[in-house]
Image (tube, rainbow, N blue to C red; front, side):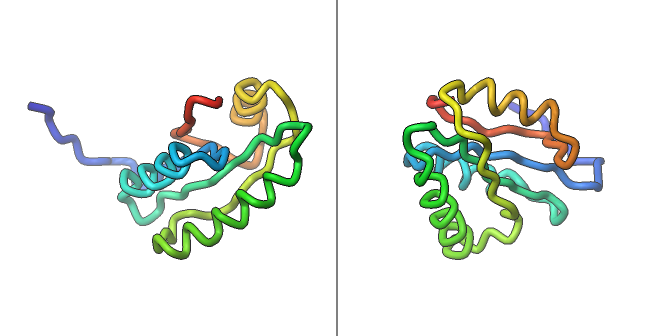
Length: 113
């Protein structure tokens, strides 16, 4: 049996959920919402566009806004569209490790990344 450990950190965790429009990526978004139990937890969505299909990012951003309203996900905040590239995993890794604005505790990815 697993042992429960209460969270002692009161600042809240920051989750980055990488979305590509697939059902699995939206499931990851829902899962992040379920596990983010602290009132100060924040969920960010992100998308890495393929250089051949830059418009999809705005589509996913629109769905993100609708999805968070329908599911009453108050913790879901900003949606980030990263620069277009074919190297998705590197783009996400670089963003997580080099940006100065965000400090993510957990990153949720699916098989595309």
